[in-house]
Amino acid sequence: MKGLINKSMTIGEAVSRYPQIIPILQRYGLSCVGCHVAHMESIEDGARGHGLDDDTIAHLIKDANTVLQEQQDNNDAILQLTCKAIEKVKAFIQEEQPEACLRFGVISGGCAGMRYDLSLDTPKPDDEIIPIEGLRVLISKSILDLVKGSTIDYVDSPQGSGFHITNPHAPTSCGCGQHSS
Image 1 (cartoon, rainbow, N blue to C red):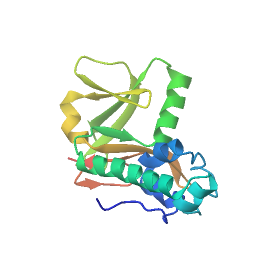
Image 2 (cartoon, rainbow, N blue to C red):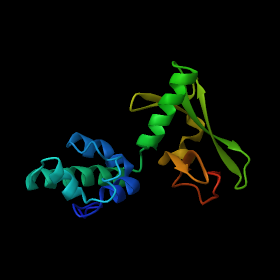
Image 3 (cartoon, rainbow, N blue to C red):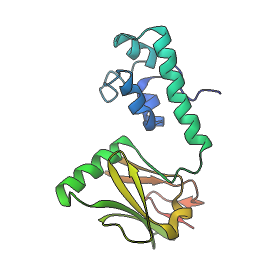
Image 4 (cartoon, helix red, strand yellow):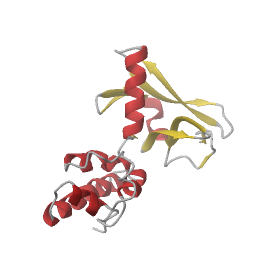
């Protein structure tokens, strides 16, 4: 298996490209994935700074690449949320409706023909309920094929903050996070 990450890659580059490896890095003791230094140092340097030896670093890299490879190979994954998106959704749910679920939907409109819709809701009989890191995400079974494999991220930038959705099945998209079917 050719690795997607390696020990000389900076922590910042690795987590920005593959946010799904953050729990793996944290499991190995690299809890500083969000600190300013982590973005400049290599995975190997960060791991050594946390007392990891060569064998443990090799296992960390192998475990991270195994997860990434499984996700690439398993196109059956319905939905992924990045750590930042999970954090924002959990905060919003706690603030607004502590018993609610996140609904991920697709509705008509937008500049590319379809628009994503994120809202708080309760389960309906035709929903697929997807547990993700303590959240329950609702997707109507009627749109599963449209959104299968999508990733929801939360982006903070000078141009604005908000949820960004990447959908591998969307043939076109625009900067507003919408797609055409």
